[in-house]
Amino acid sequence: MLRLEVRNAETPIERKPPWIKTRLRTGPEYTQLKNLVRREGLHTVCEEAGCPNIYECWEDREATFLIGGEQCTRRCDFCQIDTGKPAELDRDEPRRVAESVATMGLRYATVTGVARDDLPDGGAWLYAETVRFIKKLNPDAGVELLIPDFNGVPALLEEVFESRPEVLAHNVETVPRIFKRIRPAFRYDRSLAVLTAARDYGLVTKSNLILGMGETPEEVRTALKDLLDAGCDIVTITQYLRPSVRHHPVERWVHPEEFVEHASFAEELGFAGVLAGPLVRSSYRAGRLYAQAAGSRLSRPPVS
Image (cartoon, rainbow, N blue to C red; front, side, top):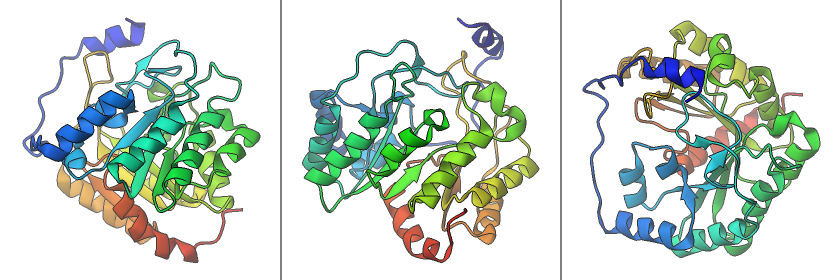
């Protein structure tokens, strides 16, 4: 284990409070979707990140696809996805994802992926091609694309933006004071700049904040202001759930009432779409949130 992981492991897994509960519903839709993902050799965030909503979302025929493989070239202290040297790029993956969207009959597909700093383009082609393929095979389907920062390289970001997803998401995840410790390979200001660039390109933008990793409520409010100023249209606010003892300990369990307060604050600030709660995840109910936000964001001008 890394030195950081050894230190994390000194803290046992925390006991969850009573409001952190999910219902196990493995009905026919969930089973069919699970079999499809296995058969097509796809990776989903639902599984890789241990999402607590997997049974609910899959039973409702909603899923988030993970592209680029199972190994990420970066390590964030909250993330369940393994860090390591990725396998060779699978250039057929965009087709398989698009065909699976068609097979599942999805009206709105969310796509994210691992960071691929091992590739010259950081995986920009893969992200863009996946959106293009989904739109080609599913002209009536909306696409939400959750991207890494591509080190802020304008040409790589533009390549992705040109694929025109309905929503371009990039998650800051935490507040500036603890950002470097939690996400050492990312930079807070650079993540905000990615959102600004996407908004200026004319895309609907989205980001996420994870609570319970050491931030204060005031820092959350400041981060929300930063996101809005950067041109973020939609925000989700979530509770950190520790994947294993190797990961960052849970500093606090945020009470549901605090999530309501943060959501109200974000709405008052002017976000076009807000979803907050202990079991909310950035792609949870993504299609509904986009539909809610699509109209109201039109009154907001580009950032620069």
